[in-house]
Length: 403
Image 1 (cartoon, helix red, strand yellow):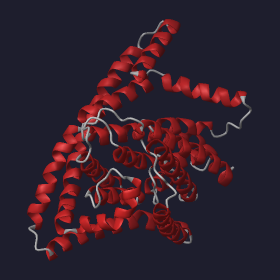
Image 2 (tube, rainbow, N blue to C red; image 1 turned 90 degrees about the horizontal axis):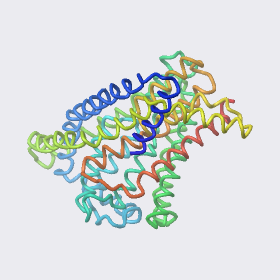
Image 3 (cartoon, rainbow, N blue to C red; image 1 turned 90 degrees about the vertical axis):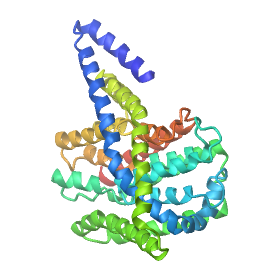
Image 4 (cartoon, one colour; image 1 turned 180 degrees about the horizontal axis):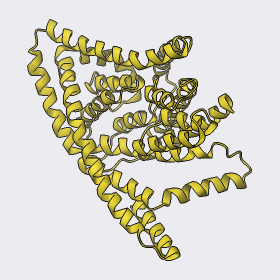
C-alpha cells in the first residue's frame, strides 16, 4: 500500500509541476512488465525445485536427513524451542544454510522452500508466521556467504585489477548482518542467544569458517577465484552422490523416490506466483515513479548537512535496491562500476553491499507465499534491521580497507 500510495503521490506532483503526464504511461507499462517478470521467475523455478526436491526425497527415505537432524537437535532446541525434537525441518534448514554459505543460489532456494513447508507442518495458525519460520527467514535475508562468486565475476568482467579484494569486507559485512538479525529475532522471541550450547555450535562454525577463509586468502588471486568458483559446486555434487549412495545402500527405488520428491516442485513454484507478482509489481511502481530518486537525493542532502563524507553515496542506489530487487541492485552495481570505474571507492562499496545482504522483500514473498502465510509479524522488521547492519558495516569497512 505504501509503495503504491507514495508512487501515486510522486507522479501527481511531477505531472502538475511539469505538465507532463507521461509518467503514468511508464508506471502502467512497468506494472505489466514486472507482473510478467514475476511469473517468469516462478515458472523458472519449476525445474530447479523438481531437481532438488527429488534428491532431497532420496535423502529423507535413506535416513540421512534424520541423522543430520539428530546431530543438530541441541542447536535447534535452543534456537527454535517451538520445533519438535529431531524434526525433518532441521535437515532442510541445514542444507539451505550450507548452500547459501557456498553461494549456490539455485540449490539454496529449493532447500529453503522445503524447510518452510516443513516448518509450516507444525505451525498452529497456518496464515500467521511462527517463531521458527521468522527466525529461518531472517537468517536467509541476512545471507551469510562464504564464497561471493558472482561478485568476483562482475568485477573480473569489468576489468578489476584484483577482483577478489572485496572478499574479506564482504565476509565481515555479511557476518554483521547475520549477527544483528539473530539478535533482533532473539529479542522478539526471548531466545537466550548466549546459552552455552548455542555458543559451542557458533564457535565450531566460526572455527570452520575461519579455517576456510585463512586458506582462501593465502592463495594467489587467480587461484582464489578459481577455488571460490569451484569449491561450492564440488561440495554440492559430492552431497548429491552421498544421497544416491545412501539410497542405494538402503536398497531404495531411487528413481521412484526422486519422482515423488520432484512432483512437489511444480506445485510449490506455481503457488508463489500471486505473492511474487504483488511484491515485484509494487517495487517496480515505487522505482518507476521516481520515488527512489527522491529518496536517494534526500539521503545525500542529509549527509551533506551533517558534514559527513559523501564519497560513498554513489553506492547508495545499490544499498536501497538490494532489499527490494536483486536484478535492480545488480543493475545499480554495474552502473556504478561503469560510471566511476570498477576499482573506484564507491564501486567497491557497492560490491560489498551487493555481496553481503539479500533481497528481503523477495525472500519474504517467496518463502511465506509458498506456504500461504499472510501475516509476517516481526519478520520484515528483523530482516530490514539485518540489511541496515550489513549496509552500514559495508560502508565502514569500505573506508577502513580502501579509502
